[in-house]
Amino acid sequence: MSKAIVVANQKGGVGKTTTSINLAACLAEAGKKVLAIDMDPQGNMTSGFGLDKEELEYTIYELLLGDADVEQCISRDVFKKLSVIGANINLAAAEIELIEKDDKNYILKNAIDPIKDQFDFIIIDCPPSLNMLTINSMCFADSILVPIQCEYYALEGLSQLVRTIQLIQDRLNPELEVEGIVFTMYDARTNLSLQVVDNVKNNLDLRIFDTIIPRNVRLAEAPSYGMPIIAYDGRSAGAEKYRQLAKEIIKLNKKSGKRLTEKLSEKLREKLIK
Image (cartoon, rainbow, N blue to C red):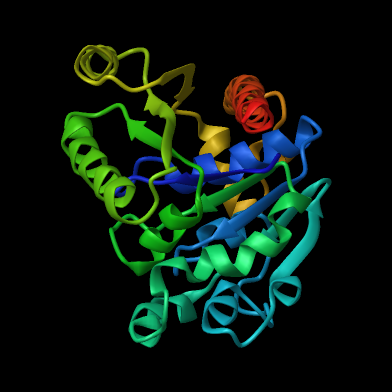
């Protein structure tokens, strides 16, 4: 069963794209078939996987507008078991061009659903704002992974995101869940990082992953070489932490899949009894 996870935070600079790239790569390294979708007009996830965003013939923009089908837009096996639908600055115009389309909030869902089951995980990188691209991503996704930078204003941005998620759940995608919170840019040398982690744990009733992503020079360098961290420096602290996060998510979704199977079996038994 495929799982679509949107990596989102309305606050910029929290390690959202870094997490999208490296989580997708580590899930693929663990043997899962992964599709990474870049929904940010900056196209940083695209270039982070070594694709030239300006040279791509078809991107997520053409897919959303209906100018290309999903197979044309997928760059297959960019890394082993990892495929990408890229983005570039053209995507910035999508919000205006899509505003009068029917079912405008479900364009991504309708485009990706036919091939969703080809993949174990679909990881979607969103822009740091609540716009049509983010709403489309949340209407398609099964869950949201929230990266939080260990800094003073972390909770402020998070409270805004929680309100957004509740609105999407109430009005557009009642099946959407919060996958969990992952702390990023953690600096063990500062009291502030420790205080932010404790503050979030004490004030939010949300799943918090055990893995905490540290500030790491190699992690910061990797995108400029068009590589996820496991390809750039697989022995670095950043690589090991993202591997740990991928393992946590795989384990979590095995449990979720088992619970869903049990629920479906129970419903089937109820129908047979009736």
